[in-house]
Length: 76
Image 1 (cartoon, rainbow, N blue to C red):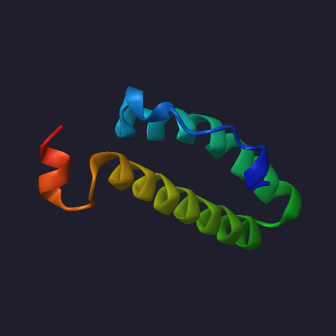
Image 2 (spheres, rainbow, N blue to C red):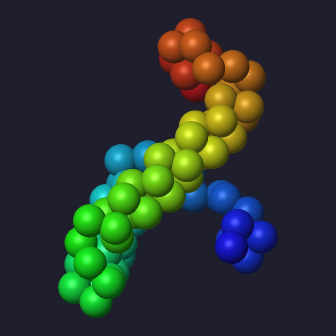
Image 3 (cartoon, rainbow, N blue to C red):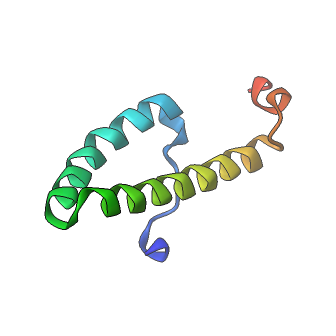
């Protein structure tokens, strides 16, 4: 699955705006999957995927900033 996702270039729109857009797309999908396959399992899988993506995006941003301390983020 990960190989099919294009390179991430969305940080230009800002993290909060990005999360809002993602939530508006993902929430109806999660609700539909939960209705079809069972809420508990779908929420468990969605949570795992969201945490994994957030960690990957955080690492990519830290790499771009040259580190992951608050000082690195303040410099931008």
